[in-house]
Image (cartoon, rainbow, N blue to C red):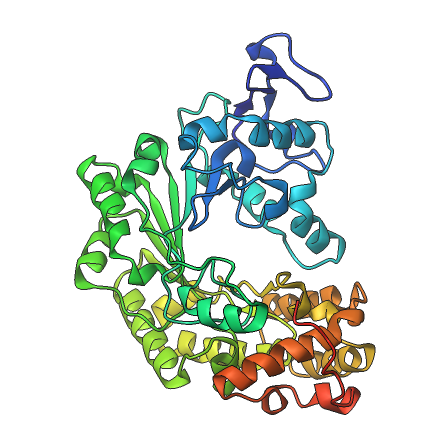
Length: 435
């Protein structure tokens, strides 16, 4: 492994279990990777949500970061060098787990494959520029472009989908974010473009937001596009414009994660008001595009919740069918499958299911894995392990109430997707809260 040095200083403060007396004594990254709780992202990455709030990564617990840690209050570089990031780096170098990183700790303790922390540590060379001097420097930005979206997925809210606003008013009396967010501004990240190696776009639905093309055009005009990889998370209902696809050809690599949460009616229920026929057609077009362009990589990234665990094997077999139909694109797409468990809202977590349902679903999922590749089998098993790792079934009545209230608004029926819910617990839950 190439020895890149990481300075153990942040914001002028020296920290860590063995603080260096000079920069020359900074510890090589090989040593940092051995630290139990260390993650490369606080040294290289900024996540910007649709409201402009900045966090060390997309999974960092929002309650640990004040809303004032926002691009409306300070430039990105100032926030990156400020006390929030400094504290996280200090704790990691001292092998103390930051509270905001709870989701990774939960995944790792439950044996759910590689956490986001472990995965980025494994791929650290993708985030460090050859000229990196060991100081924190943003080389990877994830941008939630806006909350503009055409879907209102059940695990989402109005902060990430403007379509959720009316439903939240009905459910809670008010919306988390009553208005659409403004489009993301190039000026917010322009100072960081010379150092970027990886740029990820989320939303909302990023392919609805044409404003982000300004960032791609700026990188292209600067001559750096060939050094930068792009990543998109899309709900697979929107086809990119010709202009955007022309820009993609100029970048080092383009990764497109298709957020599909099941096959047929399961996906449509979770990702209302999607239509499976449209989702499948758009997915096929992406495979056709990737078949012609080897630098374009497709991945499958479902959000696995209390609604759809048992549909995961069927979804994976569907994915493998597309991979077989488009062998060049499929060779790459088989390697990128990320089954991500839902943690928020907490009532949709797999761990809220009562034990009888967990036992049945465990048996169902494990019985359908034999024809899947080993890594996909293990991905499903890791979800089962996560489900069984904690009992949060006291939240199950709230899951039922939340689901049935949305069903009444959307003309859908939980019993058609998860009939087991009603076999286990009678329908006498009207007093439960949706919160």
